[in-house]
Image (cartoon, rainbow, N blue to C red; front, side, top):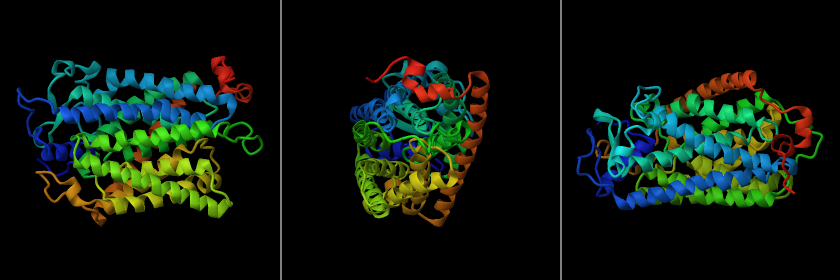
Length: 449
């Protein structure tokens, strides 16, 4: 087997080596192989935790930060995307992301989940030949876990265009973006055939696939749609920070499924991923709060929950590769970087990233991806094919930079093109009158109360 196992595939390989399930394989599991029930139970639990991150977690987090007249519309975006992404993933997204294909996109061999149902009770292998990785869980569990990632990524993007995009535009954009942007990037990074996978870039749970991808898409959305009506003059303060705190708390808890679940099994690697996730989130929350306290004179609730999310974002690519002390450093850096990205950066550049999708997910995703290249601890990523694992080094950092730049550029260009297409077909933005009235009434004919 080639030594470039990274991210999800490396996690599964390490787990399979450490546990009693199938080890790394060059061929498919034996016909009489059985799933590891402990691993499967953990992955089912993790899947539910990650789904909870979008509904109700992200839905409440974002809804609590918009104005009263847009709360229902914001909740609806996360809820609708959950349904949209589920169907897109089942029909074609999973095949494009995890079908064999080539270096850039999967094939259509798993269209409508063809071939998955027949092996519902057997472990499966991702990839073929020297790059194949055997999993200890059924493919139904793996594809459902990955579906929850495909759900939350476009939902994160909504934070950048909150309070001004048409619902019809959001629906069409989400469908196109999942197919054209998310699925290919997922294939690049996490499928053994993917070209970024082949480079040796480290992304344990979605620093590039989810957070940089969503953050950059959000930035482009904010630039293309323009600023909200009244920004700089009207009161844009969050209507209900209590909802945002509840949502952020659910995100924090759900993130254990996001990161520790990406170990692919119930073992020591999942335990370390959970530990460093907690440490980074706490460190980032405190870093943001103290930075805000020093700059603005008061520590805010919004700053605390935003800081925690910043830390969770930054530790995501590193969770299965770093030890607790580096996780503490990553958290502190992420808290400071997120505070800068959500305050100074967007004001200096003049764009309206409504709920800081780029300021938190884009900026801190980049921070986490780069620091992974510095702090990666070899034994955590060790496999039978690569017994020394991958350790932080200048060479690894350069690989991380390459992967970050590639995803940034591709996502920015592809997202801009898709937005222009959507604008021609249905139009992107509500009218000024509809925006002033609020999206709850103008788009959905309802009020929060």
